[in-house]
Length: 124
Image (cartoon, rainbow, N blue to C red; front, top):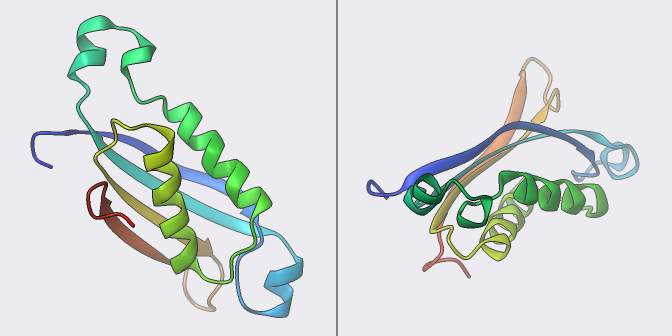
C-alpha cells in the first residue's frame, strides 16, 4: 500500500440503529465513521477531472444511506458492510481501513468501536 495514496472521510456522523440492547434497537444513536481508501490519485492529479478521482461524496452518501436504512446488531458487521460499500462504489479502491464508533455507548468511555483493514483481493 506504500505506493498508493489515501483518500479519507473523517468523522462522518450518522444516526442509525446499531446494537443488541432493546433501547439500541428502537432509538437511533450517533454512529461515527472513519474511512481511509487506498487508491492511485495520480490520474486525477494529472487530469484535474473528477471522473479520474474517487468521489468521496459518492462514497459518503452510500455509507449514510446504508446506516440510516440498516439495523445491524454488531459493529463488527457494520464495518465489514462499509468496506464492501467502498469497494462496490469505485473499482479503483485497492484497500480500505474502516472504523465505526458508538460514542457514549459505554459508561466512563468516550467511545467504543471496531477498526478493520481490508484489501480488495482478500475481501469476501
